[in-house]
Amino acid sequence: MMDDRFSRVLLDQAEIQERIRTLGEQITHEMRGLVPCVIPILDGGMIFASDLVRKISLPITLLPIKASSYGMESVSSGNLDLPWGVPPLVRDRDVLLVDDILDTGLTLTTLRSTLLEAGARSVRTCVLLRKQHANHLHSDYIGFDIPNEFVVGYGLDHAGRHRNLPEISCLEIEKKN
Ligand code: IMP
Ligand code: MG
Image 1: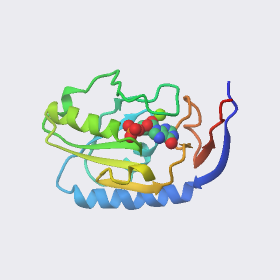
Image 2: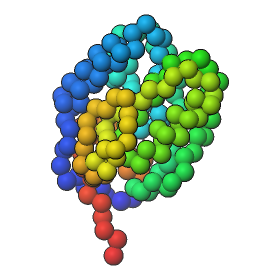
Image 3: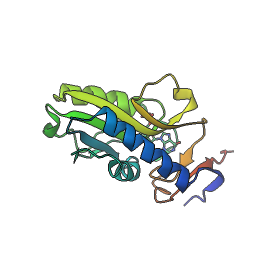
Image 4: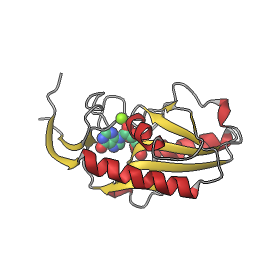
């Protein structure tokens, strides 16, 4: 078992919660009149989504999807695994996809087209974080733009660990000799 070290706290609990409050207000305003089908992307998006939906004052439904592109590594494997598939309940729904971080864009790009093929009426996306190297990639809602570092906490993991940390920290990745 590796011993992970954190170089610094990037976002503390108060900053995260305040940003989620304003994102919730914006989504409530811009999706008013709709009954959004909120799709947390598990596992990473579940912590963020659970706080976010409580700041959205609309009659939402929740429909989690499990997706993974990383395995046990800290570099994307390049293909997206959807072990639970995509539920047929998305047909004719206005979907809001919620994920922890926009990195290569593979997760959101793949899921957006999969959901549209499955009959979703519209697909919006919301990510808590966007890495600097992804700043040309679009998401309808973005919590914070962050530097190109590997971060953990608040849903984000390294090899399955640290998702339960209440703040977001930068991980020191050990250089292999
Ligand atoms: P993308 O599909 O490459 O945009 O990456 C999205 C997924 O990669 C996220 O849902 C995370 O699970 C994972 N990911 C990307 N960057 C990080 C990071 O810095 N820390 C932890 N997980 C990450
Ligand atoms: Mg992950």
